[in-house]
Length: 248
Image (tube, rainbow, N blue to C red; front, side):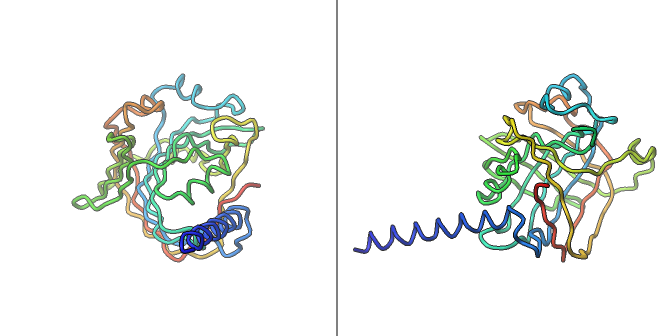
């Protein structure tokens, strides 16, 4: 009897979680999902354009200015349940689709299954690694994705004055736009165009400095940015927001 009740309770809990995921990622949550986070971010020009083109699915064209975006994020407050705090690492490539420029994500491990399932529904290549950390490191921060005992992405941030602005800032390159993803992830054939919207008025504290980037040698994108490359970057803390990420 107890076993039957336990099994029934598990099934009900599973149904509730599935309903929650559907509501969360179909755009039904009008209050927003992403409330607070902290992150290390950097943007690089690719060292290997041939590899860059190969990593873009054939549905997408090369952008006017190829760029690689890298980040490690701790989403400290998200909603609604069953969406709970999680960590994420990502690598995105600037891309063009049907004449519109945006980004395409090629790497996005996360630490919670709800975040993984919801993201994969929109085409993001999410999986669960061993761990993702974002921790203080002296006067800076260190973010790392580790899987199967090896580092897959390592970003270390040190605050400092950036005297020489990167070319994408100097020349005011367009960095916005949606994210283009294949559904199922990395396979398609469907192309999902995903947009991010901020519904609230978050408080954002940004510290500028330098980010040392190392993409794990076993990653297909490893040669996009040479190991140990130091880039202008930032550490950012956002509170009180209400961001939404959903398909068009």
